[in-house]
Image 1 (cartoon, rainbow, N blue to C red):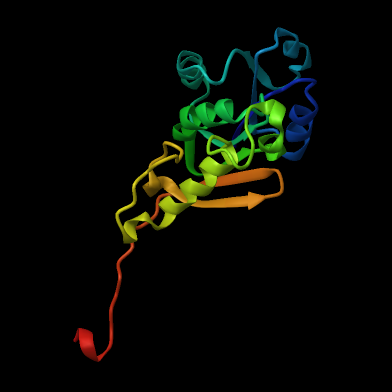
Image 2 (tube, one colour; image 1 turned 90 degrees about the vertical axis):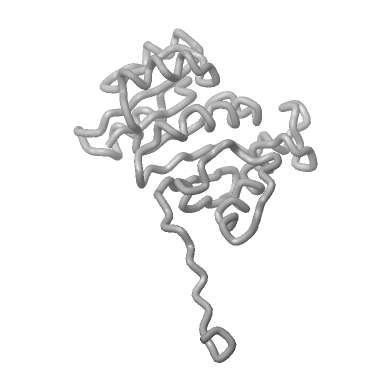
Length: 181
């Protein structure tokens, strides 16, 4: 089991993850604040910006594929979108990507509001249309950059969205009845 948390801050959730998962779990964290190294006990914390491709590629060489990714970083929609698009491909088959504290999409000060199209919540809602995109031509406007063949499900909870990565078999429409013989 390999787990990455974006946004370590005081290390409380790192401690919970370490306690919840067995000793074989590899737990990593990303934060922009150098002081987060002080909470590195049995986990590995990388200092850098999770929205930067160079940084993500560098740490990916060290940690490989991930089973769980938790975004508890800046809570800004633009950062959540960038981070998702960089890290979702690093998620293993059957893995889960969780974005939390999405109530910030409803705060004016965060630069997004639910009626604006650029909230992570709204990107995710429109991305859910990709789950059925094989039935019709679907113009991918305002969706997250994700291969729909790898997106098995999206779960919406209060303040949280979870993406389940699992290859889907192509949908075949089977028509039966007198008119289709």
